[in-house]
Image (cartoon, rainbow, N blue to C red; front, side):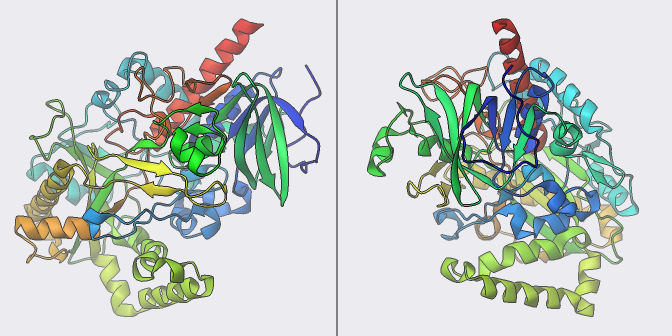
Length: 548
């Protein structure tokens, strides 16, 4: 073996350094890949992360500080969509986690595998029976747990059962439609068990593992045979190059990975030529097929304060039987949400982007001033009392038929991509969410929540007709931060990677993140992303062992 890599806190040098594997992105999947690969002491592993170390932001490590992590600008990619015509031409906030741990360091820590139906659409080798062993290995490290019941959550369960749901103890058994219960969460007491904490942090002293933070990947480098041989990146104002003996693995997420591929010359030939990017491989499917879970929130005021501080109670149902999904497959998810848990922080993060035009939003002092006003408003006694009593049923479109795109704005890696989530481009998605709103109202009207208090605040009882509910959905839809599918896995011409996650048309390059997902699960993306990272690491290790 060649000279061991420097320790994780070592400064970058001007010299090119060589590793066996380079992992781009220390998020939910990337931490799993790097941690597992570096378990082999003969392999040198570099992981590049564009954001800060997790330890620089302690709120990413404490479970009850998730809402503070969400409003820390250093921990979020602050992105907006292109104007969404079906959503009144609004530009929608499309943030994701930035920094070690990625979105898994800023999310609400819900751990959901998904439905067995979801994986039946992933192709050979990725069915439910294929992925469950990988989920189980991830869960052994995460030590997933459930939050204890509260009076409010038990009232919500009774109301949902009265509305036709069935209570279930384990929502990770692959059968979801018609059930609700307490979600598993990657927490241990008051510790957040992100993939960084579980897979990478315990091994920072490995001499063969280097984590470089504030390292912005600019492009993957290829030789004349179209083999990935390294990564060019920027750190502390310097352009550096890391070389890969074996492979480069992209784990930057479903919005950043297709951007980096296109910057590297893998994407639609005409679009790359228009930006002056040398073509490595013409692959029109890169950046296509973006899937996301839009949601709308129906809010109510109760007669007493809620006693819940976590989004821990989830239900799944088939709201729209008229779509092409399989019988018995859930199309919507229902999250019972206590406003006192994080409503204030959600307003601080999202309201400035909704109220300010983009040029004004980008003015830091103006954005900060508006946030200060929002904080002051939430400090008012009558607002505090309202928030304490307010709860919502978040209706999430779990199986969208709409697809979007991620395209380059320019050849400058610092420019955000042009992201079009394509919300409601498939008309049945709008109808499914409308039916989901009606179901949420039926739950709230059940005797249990009627007794608790169910005065509807948003959208309000006057929003009752089909047309008015549709208008509410169009106006209020927002992301659930579950991006997937932009470098889809498969066998046909529209696939970017094969079943072992190797990028087609080149060699030495693999993708291990939610961008490879061909059909988005009805649930959150964090658990599937970690599962993908685990399987990628096993593919790589088995291939490495065969080569010896």
